[in-house]
Length: 118
Image (cartoon, rainbow, N blue to C red):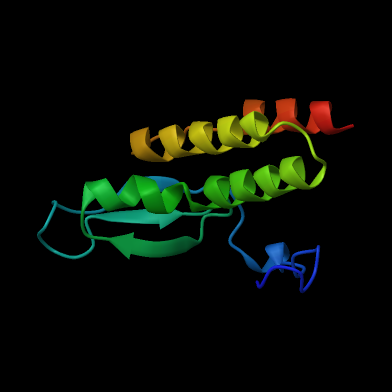
């Protein structure tokens, strides 16, 4: 989005996404037969197949990363300290980088953000 064109992001169709949290489910051996893991939505639907462990956690973290970006935009728009937005994003990045079989929930972060914004 170009600067100055709008102060609002276009609405998202969040209801069209597979429900979160997304988790990693083992499916085969790494690098050998495809897929090695599946990314599963909370409704049991398979989001995608993944060949390598290192990619699975990052893909499973996608909904939390999106939420962190949305939270950071809200923080910045409300003219709260930039450090708050950086903190939200850093926590999401750490969670995405350390995630594998069991999801690392950012629910606490989200609850903290929402309680500060009210």
